[in-house]
Each structure stands twice: as C-alpha cells, then as structure tokens.
Length: 342
Image (cartoon, rainbow, N blue to C red; front, side):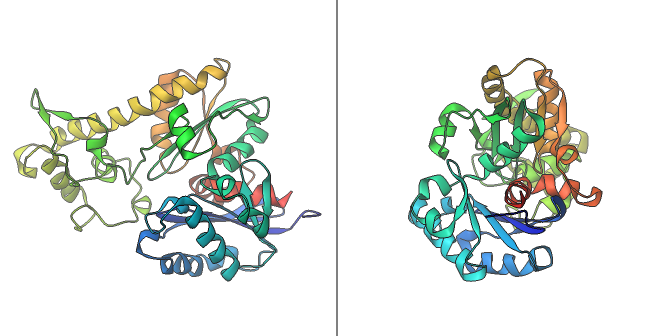
C-alpha cells in the first residue's frame, strides 16, 4: 500500500461477534460490535457485514483480522482461516489487507499461504498500536469471552507466544471474558450464608448474569441469548445464578445474591491477576495498564491490584470524542484500520 488512505474500514471477525471501525484522516470516527455466532453458519457473518454497512460503506480500503477460525463451524483452524478469507474476498475489494503476526498487513493471496500467522492475530494488531501510543505498558483487552495480556516495551510487542496454544501456556491469553464465560469455570464453590456450597457444573448462568447483578454490565454488551433463553433482567439473572448453588431466587435476599456474584467476579479477577503479574515482570513497576474491551471495569480493578496506573485505550486512541468508547470496545478493528491508514 502506498500513501495514506483517507477512509479505512477495520474488521475483527470473531467466533461470536464482528467488530468494525471506520477511520477517516487517521482518526476513528465510528465503531460497532454486533453479534455474529459463526457456529450457526457463515450466513451470520454476511448478515453482520450488512448490519455494519453504515460504518464501512465508502471506505477506500478494508483491513481485517480474525479469531473466528477457532469456531466449531470449521474442522480446523487452517480450514477456518481459508473459509473466512473466502468470505472477505466475496464481500469486499480484492485489495483488502489481512493482519499477520509476523508481516503485519498483507494481501489476501499472501495471507492464504501463512494461515498460522493469520489465525487469532487480533491481539497482536492492538498490542502493536498500543506500543506506538504508549511505549511501555501492560496491555489488557478483556472481551466477552477471552482476555489478552501483553507486555509492550520500548515501542515493541514483547509477546512470548504466537499461537493460541503458545499464549495459553505463557499466560498471555486467559480464556475468561466479561460476558460469555461460565462462573463454574472460575471456582468450584460459592459462599452461601456462611457456608461454602459446591457449584452445580451446568450451563445455568454466565458472567453477564454476574455483572448484571453487580450493576456493572452495559446491556448493549450482552448480545447473545441467556443460559435459559429467558429475559435479561436483574430478577432473571438472580434466578440463573441461584441454580448454580441449588437454590431458588427467593431463598436469599438481593444483597446476598450480590455477595455471591461478587465472589464469582473476584475469582475472575484473581485468575487474570495471576497471569498479569507473571507477564508484567518484563516491565518497570511504573508502566501503566492500558485497558481495552468491554471488560474494562474488570481491567481497571486489575490495575489497582497490580498497583499500576490505569489508562483506558479510549483516551489514547486517535478518535473523535463520540467514537472513543466504541473504538476501545472494538479495539482490534480500530487497530487494523489505524495501522492500514498510515
């Protein structure tokens, strides 16, 4: 690519959501996150592309990253990358760019030859942008399902793992998120009226219910059906949490259910704290935590526990004021668009 593009659209194709950002003259002007559960078929992705047309329409260039290749819709990650590249080529210009961990943004044909560098590369794109903006930082992006924890130092991404498997082993990828994760994956029991009650290991509730009970969930971030396919309200979330401890909602008071919800959220925080503490050993003690994703409430708590300053990517990213929060929510999409616009 030669010369600066005035309008660039960035896309992050996940297994559950599509994130899209629009960059004009080097600044994010709009961004959105919409549901696109690939396990239900690639038609969900095509529908998400249509839904986000107001954001990407008229763009001179499209830049893409992905994690959706891991979806159970595909027999392997390599097959998933190939299928998603086909969808990109079908819906967008042939000169679209694909983000790779080793070569940055490349043409679609080149991306086809390096599926391992395309697969789940979105964290590297955002970390690369954070490295440019912050220099030294612990970058933590908590989305609906996973949390990326990456050190950047002297303007460089200091990752040890490249693949999902490698990053799971190094603590740079933690499979817990603000909305879609299961509470029983975080602990084996919960305190109920002074006694630890073992949890029922069933899909009765999600972390969306936990954070709704705590009053820290934005409803726009809970885009998928609930565990029981019922409404997304405080009473309904309490009912779902109650099942985890073998109870009915009216067995305890609302404050008691909040106490139990806080237990689950605390265990999620402990999980990411332990790995973040490990990864942060590469950095000076005063390097900030830069937080992104819909779970920034949890990331800010992490920064306090690590005794590090907290910076929201929304405050760092070049963006119009009314697009900052959405850009941070859709950080990988904003990152590839900004990187491609240079």
